[in-house]
Length: 511
Ligand SMILES: Nc1ncnc2c1ncn2[C@@H]1O[C@H](COP(=O)(O)OP(=O)(O)OP(=O)(O)O)[C@@H](O)[C@H]1O
Image 1 (cartoon, rainbow, N blue to C red):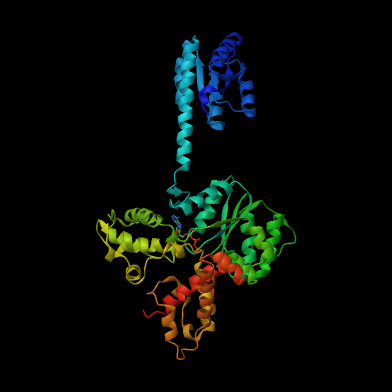
Image 2 (cartoon, rainbow, N blue to C red):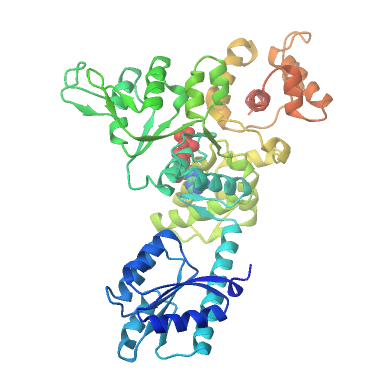
């Protein structure tokens, strides 16, 4: 809509006759005008509705127009303000423009003068709106601690924007090092709880017998070593956000206590008889596949539904395309400064290698690689031979990960655990360390794994399973969800298993 053809105006002018005259001028220009003659009335109107334009006399009977301008700038910064001034108050009008007014009119003025000023104001407002709209549709290269402009990250930024002001529990999933803690922080700082505390609790790193006290606090003497009353994370997060990192690692017994706390906001310190109530927003994260944890009986289903209200999936770095180089450049700049080096960028070979690598440790691994390069080398450009062998040998021996296999929702820890489970049931792979899941090795086909068995008739169970699943997918024309439905398993199980097979094959290959 062309705002200049129909716009709303609040006119604040204490003289009834001038007010009537300006109203007539403005209406002739297409405005819908409300006229008030006191500052207090103007502020009351603004509480009810916000006009496109505020035409404001500086001298009012009950307050200065400058006070109203200040209130508008603070609470309604989108309103365009034109000041009206008498000859003796031009200096004040100039101050008003410095304080954010668009223009001023000196009394007396005619309809034409008013019309020109109003048109200019509306045109400028239209342009500002257009730029804002254009900017909001552009991919953001940075957002609340994140670096990345891939489509996958833009979706994450939009979700964070949408959920930040809600109290609904957010549940972040993603492989290790994909930025789950950055995401939890962003949700907190982008929302209306940003002035409150952000309390992060890593459920995996706290000993089992201490975690209840870490969350809920304890009273003096509650257990050996409890020498004083201590607040837990729940109390410290009052009016803010409680981030439960690695939630799937929480002990089942504590999960039931947490469930009650999430439902009611009420909890009891260890050793206390009284209950306490707090107002907390929950954000949880895991690098496992939470529903698989529910199915395996390690994560309570009712707790899952309480926490998993707004799911946010952080993509692995390998599917984020140009973000790899964007992040690498940003890190290079940062570490240059810290280490007193002068690297300006990456050679094209180094860029290709960074882009093609699978980054099993995601952004954290990229940070380590760039730090290592900066610390150990000198020069203008980061060359291929400055990159760790791990990356360059992977490039030689591994074909670039194809986009179709890149989009797997895989989470490294879950993979490592599956690797262990399978390793236990297979004599062939019993010596695989979980850490092998993180370091790509030369590709080795499933067939060559079979060839190493002493009896060609027998193959490890996972190969039989792999063949069955792959044949189902092929028969469904590559449609994984359809194949999963026919196999009576979830699609995420297939993705996870694919990752596990890949890791197994890599690990079994001679290094
Ligand atoms: N998109 C990103 N832009 C910039 N820095 C990032 C991004 N993602 C992650 N990081 C950085 O990478 C490191 C790891 O991120 P973070 O700790 O949030 O990952 P995580 O998914 O919580 O890992 P884990 O599951 O191992 O705890 C941090 O230093 C973080 O600042």
